[in-house]
Image 1 (cartoon, rainbow, N blue to C red):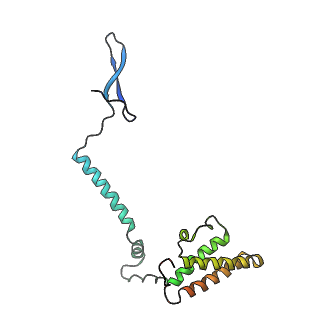
Image 2 (image 1 turned 135 degrees about the vertical axis):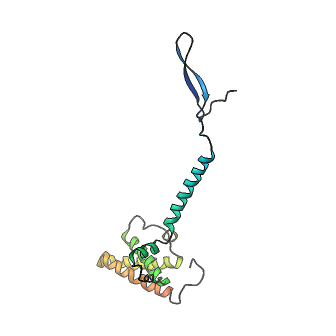
Image 3 (image 1 turned 90 degrees about the horizontal axis):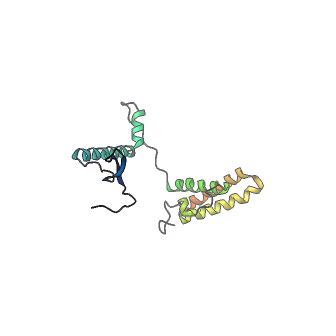
Length: 172
């Protein structure tokens, strides 16, 4: 019984000696042979997969804990971690970063607020800061524009987070 040719199936051609000494090619065994599936091969594949998974998991474990332990002497206690930034400080860092990118006019200056990772309220702060920076730029230059924008970001984030976190939903 012969199989119809398909794109992934090609019959193997054997070269044989015909009566009279002529060498001819004729179809031999069909297609490439698949490797035998043995328990040893399955165990080797499973071990390889397990090793790869363990290596990936090992790189995700707390790198700060590993580096702190490798730097600190074994007798000294590890230094405490840096305190977490307040919501106001995070707002200032994030909005100031994007404000400066927009003022500089780089390739990422035309992203929308979601692509920047900002909330709607943070984006309003960014828009006010960019307007303040653009108003100063023609008279005093780009450095003064960045300073004015940073001051506006700090003022806007302080107002927004004066009571801890803003209300009205996570997007506000």
